Image (cartoon, helix red, strand yellow):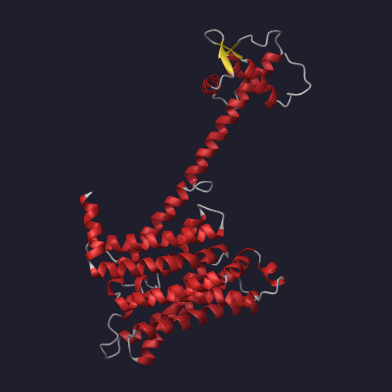
Length: 381
């Protein structure tokens, strides 16, 4: 209890933590929303390609302006990311190269070019380039209030556009051909979504870095997809997951010495994805295991009930008991006779007539007849 209060006090009164945490939460919300569209459109790797393609833009912006102004570097990153995305679209449209191959080409070529420029900048005889390499892995601790304000304004703009074009984006995700038949320009919508994705990625480069930024886009949406099949719910859950990871990552890195914020946020996102993959209803691994186990148990129970029914219809007295050894012999293929009889007895469908003999109750007879599809017009034993 004391530790929780200490953490809450740290979050409230520590200016640096409050600034970094607020920026990380904004970033998680915006990327969670945009990531939902990227995941549903099977463009998860596009975020990775955009973030890596942004690196030469950052380097070129510094070379052209000679300044590490956050605005100029972000504009350079946005321009490079957008050019890289258009290059991917152009390659896919005009050549026989597949989409995933074009993503790999742009990612590696742009990132390699960016590393060359970054190495050149680091060897320049000026001091202004110091710290520019932090865009590789991010350095959230350097976030200032004006940086958080920039993230908030640009992020709010991105979310406003998403709300304004919600119906069009929904059509683009699930049925672009139908959207085209309604008169919407699928190409223009595609470029608009990609531009918003570029913006959401660029504003997070200072916090998470070009190498890990794609996790901020893909992971919240991938986790949210495990919990729901509805787009609106998925977008909201994805935004909440992104905010949770951003806030918890910033808090964890602040209370632990030498723990970088960006990678910690990604680790928190990974934990959310793992929990979702395991426990989400309908799609979670543990959920599916429990459901399959329940189905197998139900099938075994029904099989034992059916075996008792087969024995009952061959006897003049349907309440006559049958040895459990006979039921075990009839259940060689599925087994579980003892457990199934126990469950059927709890449901009032069978009774123990002697020490080792079992028979159907009237309710069990009706249930077995129903399972056998002989409930109507058949002679009862």
